[in-house]
Image (cartoon, rainbow, N blue to C red; front, side, top):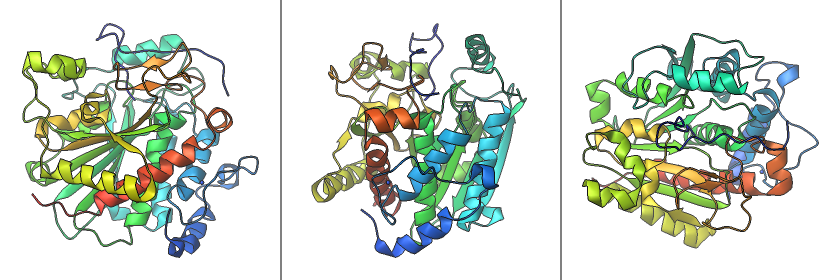
Length: 395
């Protein structure tokens, strides 16, 4: 999740702490095994680590996700924007999609330069890059002039589109919650939706360069055609889903953004004074109905906090279109006794995590300290995401 520079709303926080350097269909079990035995690149980067055990079975939501997240933890840490490691991760995502059986013409690599002009509220990413350089995050990595978005298009019965996004770059650590969790949730959902009849065209976008100013998301939006904008029904963004035990979804839309768009990030308490209104419609209400049903049927404990769509991550680029936008994230309750004193707090009362942008954001710390959190998030958010993108909303 992209944090603001220290001079912008005082929301950017970097912590240095100690840390570390598995309800689905049985019919999917055989296919899951086939995907997992595929060789994505070579023997050195084969999936799986016998030293870790995940509490999820073949066929369940999250079964594929935990295998991929283990791969990202062990072989693709430090995915800094505009580096060789970020590019390597993008290439791995493409290769994984092709191994799943998607056609080459369904997958696109959208490349952009570090100094490309975009409508990003943060402007040129140079300042953020320099900040990360000063912290030593770029040490040992090759700086590149370009980053890239990876785009998978899965046609539906309609040209109307749902975009599902997650950024794959990170800040100096394995970045399991931020944001390998989002990446693997999208990969698994795409794999499952490949064989499910669905109404909407689904476009999965793995954004690059999020951590330096949401550059990939704004570049993507700036290059959408008017037809693509007109066909957009919903944008879903997945970020930091393992930063706490509470599984939050935020959904709503703004009819129009304020003159200074960043004002929405001041939080709900400030919106009324500034005349900013978060709206709901038939689509967002149906999504809340889906969540309530899943909570009753599966005890998923999905919690609605609509104002969370103001969190500083990629969905912000899409708010200008006046369409429903949804965010998935994980957090702690306010004043949770589990949260350590140096907790990352992004927007008070909305997001309180315990691993974000720290050495703790790695698989072994999460599995040892918060057993089941990884599987829990991938399973329940996976069920929810599949229900939403399988729906046909009445508009």
